[in-house]
Image (cartoon, each protein chain N blue to C red):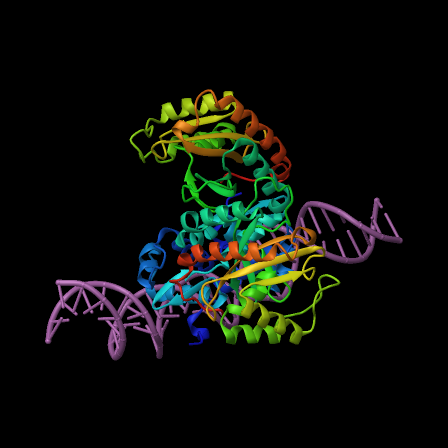
Amino acid sequence: MAIAERDMSLTFLKGMTVLQAFNDAGPAPSLADIARITGYDRAITRRLILTLVQLGYVEKADNRFHLTPRVLVLAGGFLRGNDFGRLVQPVLNICASELGHAVALAMVDADHAVYVAQSTLQNSRFTFGFTVGSRIPLMQTSIGRMLLAWGDPDWAAQVLREAPVDPVTRATETDRDRIADAVTIAADQGHALVRDEFEDGITGLSVPIGSRGTTRAALGLSEPNETLTEAEIPRLVATLRRCAGQLRPGFSPAAGAYS
Amino acid sequence: MAIAERDMSLTFLKGMTVLQAFNDAGPAPSLADIARITGYDRAITRRLILTLVQLGYVEKADNRFHLTPRVLVLAGGFLRGNDFGRLVQPVLNICASELGHAVALAMVDADHAVYVAQSTLQNSRFTFGFTVGSRIPLMQTSIGRMLLAWGDPDWAAQVLREAPVDPVTRATETDRDRIADAVTIAADQGHALVRDEFEDGITGLSVPIGSRGTTRAALGLSEPNETLTEAEIPRLVATLRRCAGQLRPGFSPAAGAYS
DNA sequence: TAAGTCTTGCGCGATAATCGCACATATGGT
DNA sequence: ACCATATGTGCGATTATCGCGCAAGACTTA
């Protein structure tokens, strides 16, 4: 099952690494920045970036490089392939309307979760700066723990064992066993609630999509702590669950690996 | 200014072509499908796809391949780099709220426009199936014509001369001169209105972001014809313009090419 | 059932592209 | 003016890529 070195293109791998590097770099990295991040020789880095420029994924302005909107087209291939525009987005909108809160949909990507869609609330002048394509950790977030709780058990065990637990707020739980306990509770409850651990003063609440053991997507919301009182939770969970049920058809066929 | 062949990586170019091919292919293409689309030998195609699998951008299931959510991370690099989460999305949400209609933001990508963000309306159970990353033509859409009208004149002239004008509805205008006239009108008015030409029974209305001659982004909405009466247009345009003005800061610095 | 068509998997030698050093030039901060 | 750092590019040696070719599996048609 493992892919032999013979069956891979090293040059392409390097090229993708360069493209990835734009995520870890600032908004407008220089050639040297990318070379440092990737660790490749500047000549190689230059050729690979120029290839991206030629293809229209990157623009060069004043010896700095930046991504173009064309990278979104690649994302569009995924979103369209899963019929997000028709099957997912409308459900999210209705869900947000019923909840009175903005909701987000995230999927497993190795040892992170990736925002794949979000329904923004009309009046909310307030956002956390997350967008489609944002990666969030699994260990410290509500959505992440829900994915761990109902995702592939082997994968979850490995993540719980190896994923970093660096504190990002003062309340971040850094004890792996305690996190595992929280995940177990989430698995039994069918929803995950995390307060303050990822962003100070913020509570995340999420439910899984699909069935226990094979879940790859989760639906969640984030609000200031005082907005989500204990009394409110049951109603929110119920609504989230109903929406998650409607989203399920869009996530059943592709079996998908956790890598 | 042209990039010499010496300064490019052919293997990387082929790899990106394979990744692109997932857009033109169905949702779950086989190895042979991709090889046909790209025109490369199957052995090469295989190596390149396996590289993508190894990197986590593609999954293999039952001799078929499909994109993973990780491709969204690449898009996230662009969105985060331009601070979409904080600068753009909130404005779109407020804009939609004031208008009572969902709005979309699109940017120039060579001879197409790409949806880069959209504010969904809470209650709208209705969508056109477009998502972030969807490409729409310039010649037949409201947003496209607005981009042509206020975009770089040389680029616009070339698109008007060369872009395809294949009819997609019975009302599609196929005469380049007439399209050019419509674009001129849009340029002078500062907004573009297109009825039925892209989707039957649908009207698009859009305004530019930035200043005439250098615009690369446009803000627009789409609704059934009867929803957008002539009497409504002025109010909608005024609101769209105000939002476009607020979006402007996010689009000033990057000069950007049209390619 | 068997032939026919279309797949995927993979080994291997010749070829051609990549690699990365090295030097000249440009840029920017102190 | 100086130093540190970045970019642009030429070129020979290396090495990864290329793509043919064959074996084996899947599906269709007769």
